[in-house]
Image (cartoon, rainbow, N blue to C red; front, top):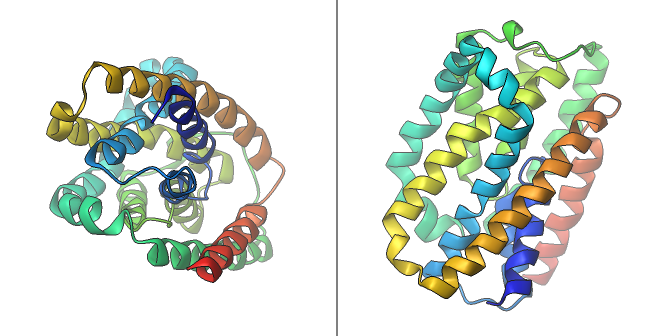
Length: 257
């Protein structure tokens, strides 16, 4: 890996982390296209540069996080199911699931179909759009959103898609659940990347740490831009375009495999 490769992976991470398209799938596909061997360092690198995306959320929402203490309680309630299940299945996920391209292809395809069907159902139900209001999310709903997020342990499902669709199914308005999904990424991804870094800190020498820093910074910058753009997008559009994209990508992967 060189600095250009690290930066490219940072771009892919920042672009896909908060969109309902699965950053894990895109990182693995990019890794394969670049011809990068699936070493322990590469695995940890692709997971841990998510910290850049986390920092983007913190910077953009710091005022709300600082002022709204009740919000932290709801984020914790949503995080706990993922934390428990993540600790139980960490080794299986990293050892076996992260590199299963057929599984990822099917998850992209099926997830895309589900998004389209779900969005059409939401449209028929006539759910109105409102401004962001975290007070409309109860603790019970937060726990259920956390359980939905756990589906993203399967690569290709997408953490963002799972949490957003889970929230929409609970009749939480679109802008609120999208913003909540961004914020839920803070404890969720911080725990996942922190656990991985602690377990694999010995893999990083000085030059590899420099590569990681490049990926981290690029991920932060790109994620910040994506978050701002995505908030504007969901105010006027459904996620059907992402469903179509997932279907096309999944079919291409299946054809190649």
